[in-house]
Length: 94
Image 1: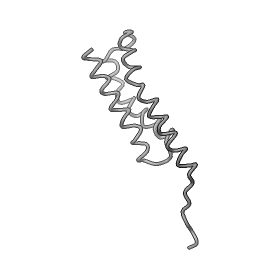
Image 2 (image 1 turned 120 degrees about the horizontal axis):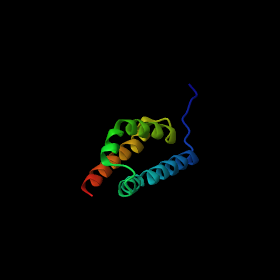
Image 3 (image 1 turned 45 degrees about the vertical axis):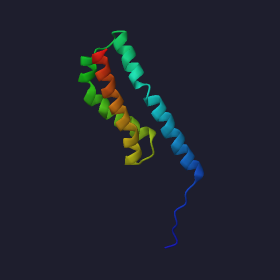
């Protein structure tokens, strides 16, 4: 009955910083994949075979990095999946 929600500015800043940092690091994924392909350490076929494992890994990492909130987990995992798929497409073209 006497409950009220309190928001702290520090927790908001922490969330924004952590999400921005995680997205910044995750946007290096295409560069890493292109480097692996260019150095012939992996092929697009090999990377395609591990797609399902990486999707699960992306969601697990997103769950560990973001607050316990499904929306923020998707905000990190979905761009990673899209970047991975775009990297595979570019790797096949290149």
